[in-house]
Length: 168
Image (tube, rainbow, N blue to C red; front, side, top):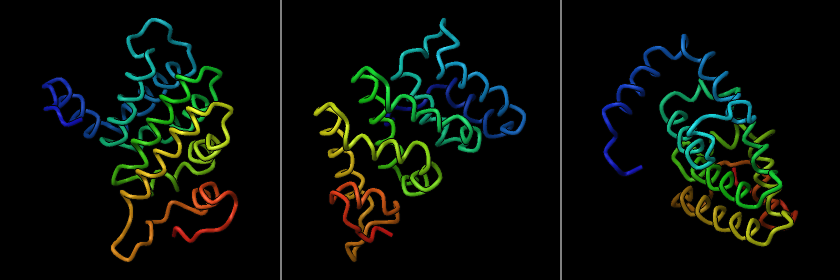
């Protein structure tokens, strides 16, 4: 993320920004096929590469991903622990970023609520990762008056074991 973008990355970003309306249906179809496993021969089948692409695209033109990102909830419930952890890491990138609170609100019914459910995952490693991410999110979005920026009541309830916290 801190590395200088390549020329091809800059061209792709500018193209996506300038032609988002025209490209959106095609990009969405491609990403949908990729996420659901219906595009078996792609370098992006690696979850880490796919998640990096999704994050970069969201930063560039989030409207293109609106119908695609809810499918990330599927990765959060994957049978394999490493896949769940990678999906958690992507959610963590989104939530810790400057657009984290907006991401949590936009995708509360799908991705964010599934992220919160990982606090009750069968794997201790997954639960631990959730706690680490939640700590980063809360520290990143604290204001001077010690109130977190509105992520919704769900995170406060998960962290307190069901009690209500005012995170708004």
